Image (cartoon, rainbow, N blue to C red; front, side, top):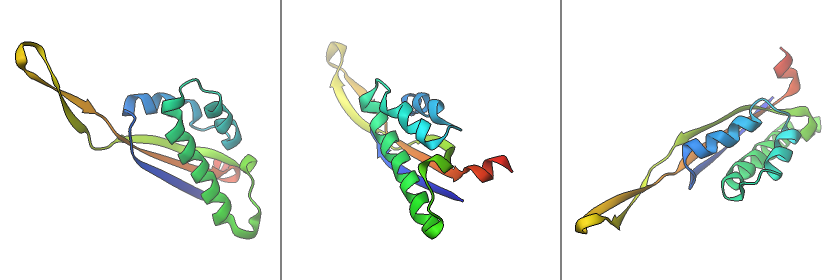
Length: 119
């Protein structure tokens, strides 16, 4: 069984999000949660942590009477794609305007049961 969560328009660049997602790809869901809890990057880990918790909750809800637990799940897919950029202007040298790009990203996390991993 498989469940996913999507977190869109998060104010984190794709490179920074991908560095965090590399730590949890393919891991046990409980282990991935622990990694994110103790990661020393609070601003960057919060949207990823929320998406992971949502994916786990979606899997448990989707299983119904199967009584699925966090220990039975693993992170099957964790990827990030670029979202729209917020473009702002800042004063530059010699009276010029310099554009500041505030990057956003879409975070996709898929969790699956361990039986699917073995097949």
